[in-house]
Length: 295
Image (cartoon, rainbow, N blue to C red; front, side, top):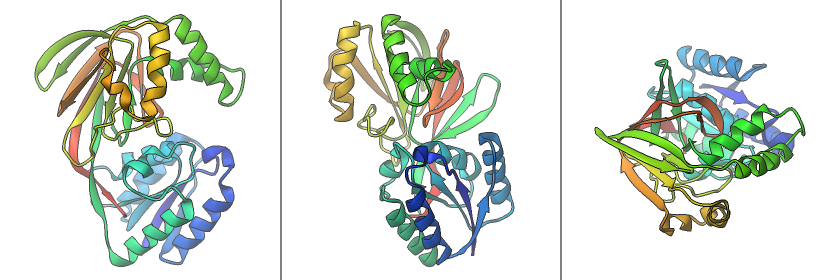
């Protein structure tokens, strides 16, 4: 069997290069490997789709959640299974789908699954933009404070690295204000104000922040979690509780479980699996068993 490997050498800021090389060797012992070369994210996504169209036995994402997100665009809704070898910073999707977070151990699981022709199915979220473009995500979509911080950080040319996101948090905290959202949830129209909003197929984003602690990628539903208008001080008190998922018990935090949601708010660009997607409005629908995962 030939499998294609979508490789991101800069994942995890390159700190796991040795483990990535060992994981690749482990896969080479189980199957013929085609490493997909790409200079940009657009090229990587195109290469993944071409490999699936070409009939590879599986597509393996060797990288972080961003690499997995690109691979999902190729395999979602197809019979081609996905393999994940996590070498990123957060690796939320590997955790969500029950895979080892150690790259070599994860490669071992994939190798055994390939030999046994074994896979598991998981739900995904299907997103449609206002322009009609379809994107898939596996973990969480952010469309509130965290998305605004990401957008601010990505627009900054200085400083380099994660420090700019620390600065972006400070800047956006100073500008914190509730946003007016409109939503159509399973056919019912809602209007509300919020400072933080997430839509989860899985529980966590940002390296273990359990923003949607009850999300289950097997139930055919999405979890929508938002924080009603709160002060800066309250937001900063709630945020650390997200790692344990206990923020959901705060009286200003709301939760819905939905099959589909149309969401709109002025001036917000949403991010899914940590990747920039599009400005609102969007429509997100739960897609049951849309992913075949080597596990």
